[in-house]
Length: 222
Image (cartoon, rainbow, N blue to C red; front, side, top):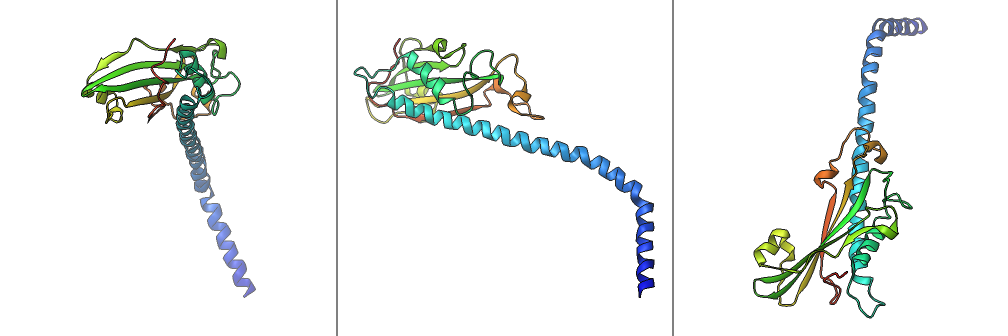
């Protein structure tokens, strides 16, 4: 019995020696595949995380739009309020002043607002405004109260977003669009990416939410 075991072990060792070169070659080819797979999993999770943070920022911005003027007599928002909202709502990704120039992560944060109010059948007031972290500090962020209020038909409002169409006269709606935008010096490694190269310039990283703002907040003024 013992002799049979030794014969079996001898045959196994001989088989290993005969094929060990092939095993090493297979192992050599499998290492790069495993590394690429790990990089892909990392990039996929990182992009998912960025999109999730952008979604959170949109909801934070919506909440601040509704609550910012609670303690003020004049509750109408200003473009400076939009700048503060942009700064505060993106802190879930950026730390300290990393959302400002020289943009250590290679990206910055922007919020666009489309406010509409139905004033009569098939007739709306519409105004666009925005706030962004372009600048060097919270004191000199870029923001705008937008152009003058324009009048649009329901068809044109629906072309902006179908959910902006209002039911009753005097009803208001607000489209909040949040974006991550890249700067010229963008490098994907700054975001912890290895393989995937997201196209920030094409607005791939965006999240939109529509709310009914409290009366008196809009239109934004200087």
